Image (cartoon, rainbow, N blue to C red):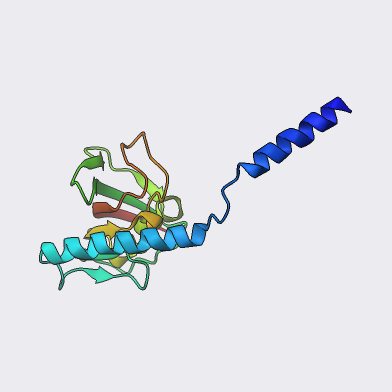
Length: 164
């Protein structure tokens, strides 16, 4: 009986400490507005307004540096081999780079910003992606990369190979 009472008390204490009114959707929308302003201010300040294109309503922007060649069909299982550099847009701090190693990924395994942006070019092409946090790592710190939560990212990606 004492154990049951203790469990009930612990459960009640745990439930009473929960945040009331926490709205995940509202938080994501609010961060989306912040990210959108960061990206559009960056585009305006750097004279990229004619070059930068938005992918639908996602807030992901891309700039085709070189379109590449071919008729590549992209699916989630398409393997892409890339040369890339990733930076935090607000600080310019580089957090990842492929260097001499050119990783190969199934497109469905990478962040959503890459899934949307890489198909904008063909094999041999280069694209720059400006990715809002919700299409990258969202509200989660990536300590192994040195990324704080809600980081807006800037990638230069060269598509070296495409395999379906």
